[in-house]
Length: 156
Image 1 (cartoon, helix red, strand yellow):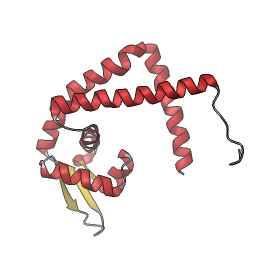
Image 2 (tube, helix red, strand yellow):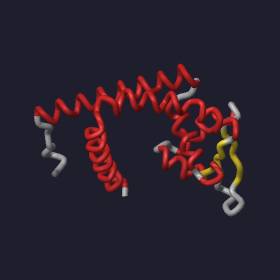
Image 3 (tube, helix red, strand yellow):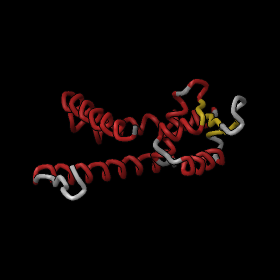
Image 4 (cartoon, helix red, strand yellow):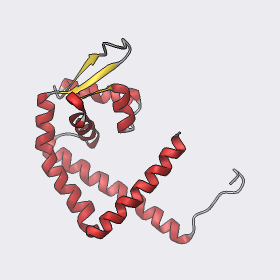
């Protein structure tokens, strides 16, 4: 494919693409609203707290957290600063590398995440997995991973 010869979408592909965009926007909006209304946090906050909760000692290097959460380092720094203000995360220097910084989930942050998780899981189940059914969810999972694999290839 050259820059002068684009691969246009077929009519069917265009319909699927537009439906996908609408689904992602509406799903994200609904999940953001649920988290905000029930837990006073954003989806970004939830993802960062979740990722830290799964890490050994509930901590990760900021660079690893940025890569895992698909945040720029600057955006992550602002998000972690906000979470620090609330007492949910704390930063500490890296002993091995003076330039490195760790983000660690506090006990308070873990408690906030634990309180938010049931409502969030219910919303994800109701809005995404329930309409798909069991077989549809398995197929959807395979398709999502195929696209993620392609995106990983293009980043390398």
